[in-house]
Amino acid sequence: AQSVTQLGSHVSVSEGALVLLRCNYSSSVPPYLFWYVQYPNQGLQLLLKYTTGATLVKGINGFEAEFKKSETSFHLTKPSAHMSDAAEYFCAVTSSSGGYQKVTFGIGTKLQVIP
Amino acid sequence: DSGVTQTPKHLITATGQRVTLRCSPRSGDLSVYWYQQSLDQGLQFLIQYYNGEERAKGNILERFSAQQFPDLHSELNLSSLELGDSALYFCASSVTSGVSYNEQFFGPGTRLTVL
Image 1: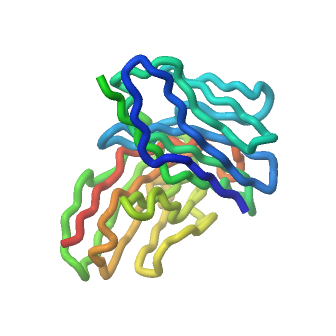
Image 2: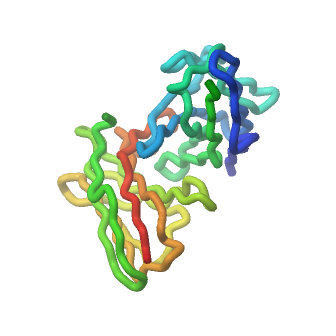
């Protein structure tokens, strides 16, 4: 079984401040981890993903995430928030099961950026 | 633009009715996934098809059904609609079925309102 926990359904930061969105996962097999972003009235799009290798993963728009196996975490960070970062962010864990890709999404974290 | 198209964008209907949502995957993608996104349930996986065959079922109600056609487009049929079925319905596609590290590409969604 696999699961994803995103701490904080709403996060507010000031423009220029550090963005930290938390994600903890549970998986019985080595996980593949993803962060997706959903802008208002749009579908989800991939920010970044961890498969194997380097545990610090860089994505689009200046975001990055670090896979920490010992903490079962995959937190998303960005050094300086921009107004355009206001969106909902989803952490997801995937595995192969019976020939299909099983994806479990977290509940999402809405990021508000305050001018 | 993810390359995944969904029609219609908005759908307003009455309780007890039946609707069909349509999805065209990215060119070359064989897998299609359907998700329901609502305020109280978050993003829920409904069903997956791969090259015309059903591969996995998630939290899909018996009143809902789907199929994938030879040209790889997919339709999600929702019948005996209830107020609680009001939600955003997303289609996503990926290249393969069982490979865990492949990202999914999401369409813009169909917003269903049941009155």
